[in-house]
Length: 223
Image (tube, rainbow, N blue to C red; front, top):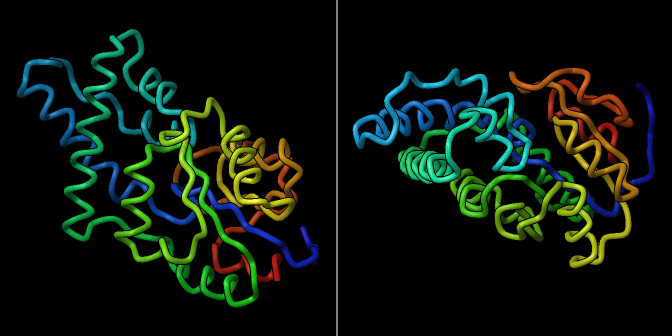
């Protein structure tokens, strides 16, 4: 789709599957968490397919764990999530996890052109802030908003809160999941769909104003 919109006031980014290759951190942490639970005796079955985790990225946390461990207790969901976060932090501290190629350069260029930049993620507060800091991109953003910090039931509500708090009246929502499309549409933003993550379905981006296959294409649309 070819278009040249007005230069945006703000760009609100999803994190996983948009800026950060979540699978490079989550997959090893996921297997480590289940190994840990088996050692503790909290869980005795085989590790659920990791595709359940990757396919659930972008959902709120409770829905992700119900997808991974359907019918299991909330306590087990919480324990699994705590361990996942623990091993993700350890791996981040060891330098693991990758941004998509060109992310820092794109953010730098957008900032230079005067765009206000934010992150809005359905992830946990510590995860979102730790990834942004560890990968050296936190300073590009005026705010890092997460469902885990603000306890929002949907990304529509999280982005609404962000816009109200930060005084944002317009711009773009940039993300790879249907929740990003809904968040943009529900708050009067244009939507840039990102179709380069290894998880998610192409149909999730229906309704986006434009779709890119590489984050480095973003300035061609926004600037």
